[in-house]
Image (cartoon, rainbow, N blue to C red; front, side, top):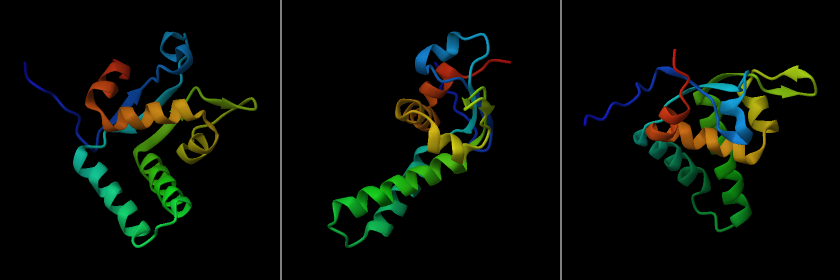
Length: 124
């Protein structure tokens, strides 16, 4: 069986499984780009460069979180069906800053994993 991957510039509509979202009549959909392993390594190198020489675990954790947010914001184009205080949030940065940890981690795992992304891909 052939392996078919995603073009790193293609935007994919992904419905997270979080809290039964995929079964909803109006699911939350995250439009994101696939992040191939080479790009994941790029983000890892950013963490290493920014934390270089630091033995402070709090500093390393802060750098890691900053780079993770950068990866998220750079690769999430938009969101639909996510509401905060009665208004729809469409901006990736605001989504990252307000969504549940499990939801954010699911989206990050999907953008880094072809199989996870395929599972939640909205079919046209």
